[in-house]
Length: 279
Image (cartoon, helix red, strand yellow):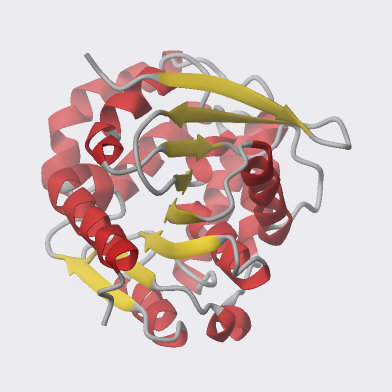
């Protein structure tokens, strides 16, 4: 039996809805910020709550876990900093004074702004397979995904994002599924993915990273083709006293491709912070 979870919704003052999955556990709360895939479906859509509860089962021995989607709808021009304010609103709703923030991919810049604007709410920050700005290589990828989103070519987006997320050895196991991408359900709101990608393409948080004062962990794979190692190294160098872990031989989807190693490193980091033993 997996951990108990519930799907909850928060209505904002401007009538948007923020959906989140709360997985019950003990100890210091963890807030999880998903990547750009959140633009396709929110975390409360079936079967995601069950999958997420299973995925983060090992977290719940010492932590409660809340995975939060971006608001729906996403207004035009909404920035990663705006999303960070939404995440603090959810913490307020759940009466969470302070939490560990774990981010993945396109969720990283949101977590950075949470730590910058609300340092009293962020106990620690994990930046997984992410970046502080968009270089030319990543911009080309995001622009292509944006074009496919605008054209409604969702099967191309699904297949390309999967190929770019993992090493060839890993994704070859699932290539037989690629033709089925044409039959995957279309997003309920196509503009959601468009707005999310538009908010990332010209994002640059580098000038503000020195304001992050909480313990920070930068973790990712050395074969990442989306947020490459140079982006990860630069981000780590700009955050005061950041710890960095590079997992060899895995790509952008390091948290799935090397799930045990990734989660053990993250949980060990949280434990060090909670025990006050961070160097």
